Amino acid sequence: MKKIDYKKKIRVIKNVDWKLISIILVIFLFGLLILSSATHANVTGDYTQIYKQILAFFLGTILVIVLLLFDYDSIGKYYKQLYVFSIILLAIVLIPGIGDQQFGARSWIKIGKFNLQTSEIVKTTFIMSYAKIVDKNKENIGDIKTLGKLILYAFPFIALLLLQPDLGTAVVFMSIIFFMLFTAGIDKKVLRNVIITLIILAPIMYIFMAPHQKIRIVNFFNPEASSNYHVLQSMIAIGSGGFFGKGLYNGSQNQENFLPVGDSDFIFAVIGEELGVLGMFFVIILFTLLITRLLMIAKKSKNSYGTFIIVGITGMFTYQMIQNIGMTIGLMPVTGLTLPFVSYGGSSILASMANIGIVLNVYLRRRRISLYS
Image (cartoon, rainbow, N blue to C red; front, side, top):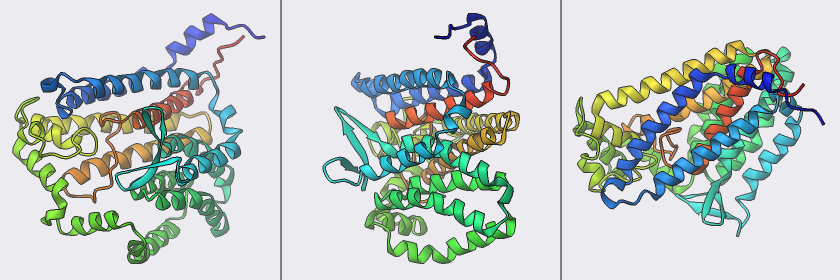
């Protein structure tokens, strides 16, 4: 058995991307502060959700450390197994008696007192497997047959998510795929044709949407509708916050329970009401720093596989940020996507941390360092 070389272990610690870690910590700690207000813990004294959020982050930190022990290239060798495992995780929730339905979608499985959204795990495993598939086909990315093959590989994931139905997460996966294919050098004309095709097919896709999804689309085009209660209350909360906000724990929309799902989907509205434009701008700056840092790491990767992984993760975080913020101000349809590291949700925190662990792994391996002698 190989012995750990502790000198090399110290070198590993020094070469970890502490800038990225610092950005994540600031976002998470800021999120905890807002969550304490969104859950009314300051009034009720019930910090259960806060403790669960901290526990999820702690477990996520352990997961990051574990992921750093393995070279991402070694993990990538099992991309076929990851691909099959990912499909199984998405399909298992559709089995009656196993899958648990919440918010109109059968996307969860119950493990004791906890609910696990399997699609959150699949975000990571899909990125690891699909990045390898794109990497193996990047030389012929301009060939329509190659592109068709890559789309075919992604099809089961989108289909299974739409069957749950979870349109929001399906679009997240589309964003991951788009970012990877764009980086691989997909022909812009082909990309344009794909976008045009999707626009043309939109009315047909609408027909097959679940009733609650149709309502969300209708509400997006008719923001004053009474059925658009969530967004209306969100916009009232943000508008009443002004430039400086009403002050932490002092938002009437939030504290008096007019704002639905304020701890998760609409947590950005809590920020807007209580911390104003300044608070919202601060969050946007933090996520801009995160995305910028991820792209810088993608450029420093030792190989294209690492670049595709990080680009996929960047696409995921970018879309989730835009979607979550956009729906709170009426610029995007409501899809139920959380704001990474800020919104309440153990599955979301663990999945986000797993992806950060992979990013740190790629950054660390830009230089060939091993924990073992």
